[in-house]
Image (cartoon, rainbow, N blue to C red; front, side, top):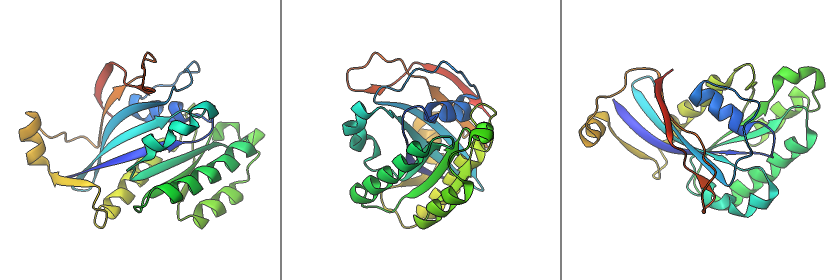
Length: 223
């Protein structure tokens, strides 16, 4: 099996549900009491796309303005970005436009971008029209999807679509590592996973000096 490695960064304003979205997908859990991310949290997961395994390094960044200056160190060398906003907040939707401009100015390599309208379970409070969000995503060459971390809605599709697009991108992007899974098995001394998705969750422990929350390994799972 062919393996490609890619870095994906999750960007958006504070409170839009970036961490909830990532933890719901990778950890299959939801909590209303997740603390704000400090700097960034790091997760890893594997997604099988046909006969290729996509190993994702997922960087969940802080939405607070005081951490904005740290963002370049997290999205540097990123191959994909999830631009998350809250469908009940126009301000959070406008904020992703700033992130897109920043990525376009600072990431020279082509990357996969996905616009994600989170909290679609609050559709009765919608402030950002679906048509407007879809049109904006199309204007920057990004896919658009609405998700609910609370109800686990469409999140798997977002990551699968991203992995599929990364597989296509890997043919022309020299920054993405590609190798045969047999080499990975020999290097790690473990067999190749055969499930569609495998995940290693590193939940944040916020006692870090560099702003990166590398949590203790909580679980290995096949989803």
